[in-house]
Structures are given as C-alpha cells and as structure tokens.
Length: 472
Image 1 (cartoon, rainbow, N blue to C red):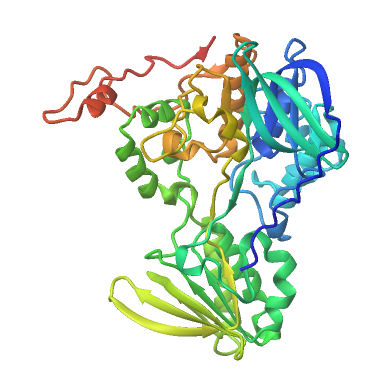
Image 2 (tube, rainbow, N blue to C red; image 1 turned 45 degrees about the vertical axis):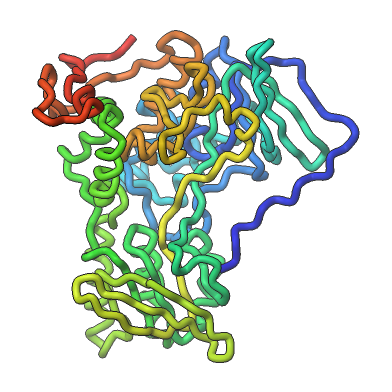
C-alpha cells in the first residue's frame, strides 16, 4: 500500500517571520471542528484567534465524494448552529446565498449531500481572515517565564512563529490499516483515496472491499453499479458478524449529549474502553437506507442473471501477500464462528478499515506538560484540555477513549467549541446546555456496590444536574 505522503520540509532560511501579536488562541489544523471554532470565535471582538494548516485550502474526504453520498447527521450539525443558530456561517445561510434554500426545503431530507457539506465548509472558510493555509506546524514550545506558547510553522517562503496563550489541536484522523494488510505491496488503496483509484479498480477482473462501515458500504455499492458493464468480480469481506446498520433511534441519539458525556467521562478507563467497543454500531455502522439500497441493487441485477459477487461476514483477513507475476493478492481468510481458514485471490484491494487519530508530533517540546493515561493516550479532561497547566492545550476529535461517541460527532462539535471558548474567555459567550436528554445515565446519589473498585465507586457517586437548563 502506498503510504500517505509526508510533506517535504521547507529549507530553513536565515530569517524567521514573527509577528509581535500575542494571540489568545492558535488552532493547529483546519478540519470541520477547528473551522467551526474559527467561525464561532470570529464575532468575539475581545478574542484573538488564528488557525494554521499545511494544506492550501479546505478539503473534506474528497476521496469519498461520491455523487449520492450524504453525511450521517442532519444539517443542523453544521459548523455553528447548535451553539449559535443566528450565526452568518450556518448551513442554511450558505443555502440561501447560493440559491439552494428552496430546493433543499422541497427535497425534504435533513441529511445534506457530502459534496454540499464540503462546499459549505469551503464557503465558510473563504469568509474568514483568521485562517492561514500553507503552514505546517512543526513544534509548539512553552516559555515558563512569559507563560506563553510559541508555535513554529514552515511555509513555502520560510518559517513563521506565532505566540499564544492557548493552543487547540484539530489535526484530524488518518487511514487505519490492520496489521495483516499493513505495508502491503501492489495496487491496494484505502477508501480515503477511492475516487482517484476507481477507474483503475474497474479495469481489473476482481476487486475485494475489506471493512464493514459506511465507507465500505458506499464503495461496494458504487462498484456494484458497474459490475455488469465492468466484467469484474466483487467481494465484500468483513470481520463483523453482520452488516449492521447504524443505530439512530431517538433515545439512542440522546447518548450524543452533554450529560451522557459527563457519565462516560466519569467511568473507569477499562469500562470506557469496553463501552467504546460495544458502541461501535451507534456511530460506525451503515445507514439503514444504504443497507436497503444495496440489497435492492443486488436484487435488480440478479433479475438478469447471477451476480458475480460475494458478501462474507465474520471473516477476517489474517494474512496477505502480493503476487506480482500473477497480478494478484493472495488473502488468507479466517471465519471466526467456524474456526476455518481458506485462501482467496483477487486483483485489487480496497481497504475501508476506518481511521485513527493523527499523532501531533509538534507537541513533543511540551510533552512534559501533556497529561497521559497508563496506555500513553491523552488524559483528556472533561472540558477537553490535555495539559497539566489546567486548561491551555486543547484537543478536537482525539478524545474518543475519554469522551465516547460524541468525540467524532459533528453534531457535538459546536457545543465543544462553545465550551472551549468559555474556558479561554472565562465567560459564556454561547449558551451551553447541561441537560438535553429525558434519560438518566447514572444513579444520582447512588452508593458504591459491594466490591466496587475505588475508581468505580467515585463514578457511581457522581451527581448529574437535577434539571435541564443553560449553564452560565
């Protein structure tokens, strides 16, 4: 597999560009979450923020920008609305400005196209003067005398430095590849780069899609549409016991709430890790509509004869090798329930195997200020800071192990950004809901059960707010 290219460091010139400004906040990375933070900080006149990214402009999952793909959350989960419905940077404001508000209204579908969401984000980015593109952050340092951070960035014209009181990292995720498929030679592509590779894939005589989530389903469905004309065989292989739909019933969606995050964060780490595995279907499954569409597509194609495809569940790829003389991969498959193994050969591989948080190597100079858990992960506080100074370095979408399924959820991004802004400014610029759910996720006032660990006992006695309201 071709590794993700690493930007070539810019040669260091003899001079460094440094502004005299001390920013209140420097954001590193401009994905949807830090872009949302930029939108929400923009009207706050007494908050000086600047955001840096190595790219030359905003781009969001362009390798999976299929024509009919939608995002998995409603349009209200845009950059700003859940914190400030009156913001000029809302998705509805973009629809109005681009003349698409009425068509979207008539469509009667809360879920925007993925291409629409990307275009909306680029529109918002184009309106902000706090974004600095083409800046690759290489180091963050802290001066204990001034109590300021210095952020070092490389640019095509030379290095730059920015001084700030707070740093917010939002560098996103990178493709994750299982060990058995790592460093594999041959024409293998992660779903993140699917579209550029699609034509080459369709020229092959056989393709295997490995994975079980939304991306795997979208790739399989897209290749399935061309299976008769393309003349290739298509296999879908997943270690999941079934092709499970993402659970999005209303009471389940209440788990994407501030109070469930409070509950989850207070749990012992081993319990959080177990729940993280058990709750995959709540946000890493396939949309139910897409599951049905795939079946309907298979049914429609089958009306004209056998469909050259196989869907294999509970099946893991435990070994793989590239056979260049045969233009084939040889996969060793293991069926978990049966305990059996078999080999399977295929010409092309698409790995829809998910993503993992990127490692912020630029924090190495301040590693002594970063809190870690026993497994070396960020020990993220409830309010998203990860430093031992008490609220100076913040993370976006790197806290799934401490905050649960709200970490990658676009719908909680605006709430999280409003929380960061409150911590940085010391006041509630935007209202923050404490309670939105009808459910109780714990036992307020409950006593530790016999034999409970000290950490579990502490979590058991955590009290949740008694009534709904906005925290000031």
